Image 1 (cartoon, rainbow, N blue to C red):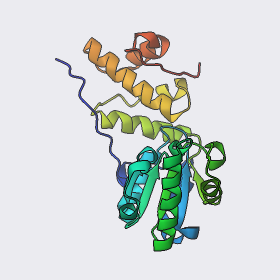
Image 2 (cartoon, one colour):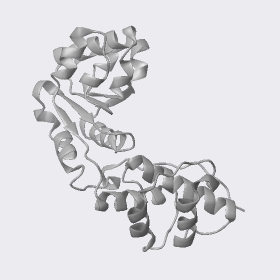
Image 3 (cartoon, one colour):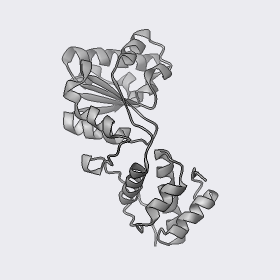
Length: 230
């Protein structure tokens, strides 16, 4: 019998796949003690590894983590007692209470000398912030980026995603997938999920032939969209 069990993503430093696409961002977070103004903004597309890097940094800095969408109702003085990471910080845009909360949290962290890491998909100029003081502070925040993935990073990411699902695949499958898939982190996650779903539905291991079927006929993969570079 096949069971679609929940997966647990490994988010430790040893599980992070380092390549030229993310090495600079990792180094920037490792140097958190020397951040100008004690703050840093990590920018990258969805699925690029921002959450993984945030957890690595939080472990190193003894920091807490909170979603930007949760700031409006948060206890800001309590949050600013330790180093903090605000994930998906752009989600505060358009919410006056959340924008004000991030502004006050920023000031509290600066007053107390508490390091502040923020993650976002885009730079602050694209967030659509309505609070001018917050916009100016965010635009003055040092920024580090996660670049588009190279072959080495996509390969390592696919290996990790399969391992997170406790799936063993033949070694020749990884380069085959890299050569056929869309070059994005989101596509890698969608492809692994679709392969897992198809293998479970058919009661078969994941092979190159099954991968070819999923890539060529994505509509059969449990409604999962698989972008490809064909």
